[in-house]
Image (cartoon, rainbow, N blue to C red):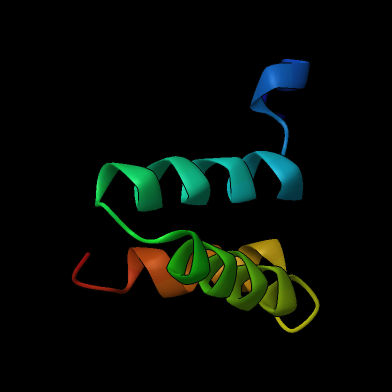
Length: 62
């Protein structure tokens, strides 16, 4: 059985959105673009499980 992750390593929707905001700012997105990005990500939290989202990422070219 795997080790339990530290509290900092546990899944957090808020942390994910924070990373998205940081990335958007780093890429020079406008506040409106960042808002759209955060809303789009936030809506997908209800549509996909963490495992489904992980598979989408690991199967992608990104």
